Amino acid sequence: MDYLVRQARESDTAELTDIFNAYAETWATFFDKPISEENFRNMQQEAEGYPFLVAEQQGRPVGFGLLRPFHFSPLMRRAAMTSYFLHPEQRGRGLGSLLLVALEQAGAKMGVDNLVAPIVSHNAESLAFHERRGFQRCGLVDPAGSKFGQDFSVVFMQKAITNAVE
Image 1 (cartoon, one colour):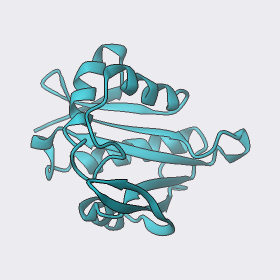
Image 2 (cartoon, rainbow, N blue to C red):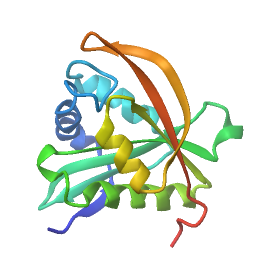
Image 3 (cartoon, helix red, strand yellow):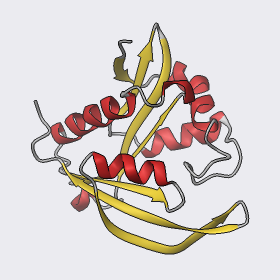
Image 4 (cartoon, one colour):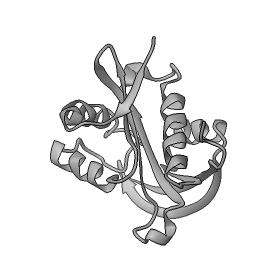
């Protein structure tokens, strides 16, 4: 099935919050319960000035991806943090890769040449996804937090995207 990738709009907030919240009780997020639309808007604000993309299918959002500053200093705009979430029914269909490529291209156009993905250490699926797409482990915070009564680390993975612009 074909997807349309476009910039996120305010009108997407409820559906994107639902997509994000589908993962709240998994190792895919740094939250242990669903977040409010207001909290989701805060995440959108963190990405202000960076690509915040929505994948749409038949007129409905089915996933999103965003870049956000790696650091608040403008001297570090060459690196950006990544996040992407798909409607659970859309997993395994190439949509994550499609969003990642679109983020790489959009980031490269604004001068970003390194993507950094912070991943919960227990999220083996995300670690494997990033490794298959050229990310390399570049750091670890151990432990970083606790979820479901277990400590977790955050694995930082990095990918150079210097050739991402079409």
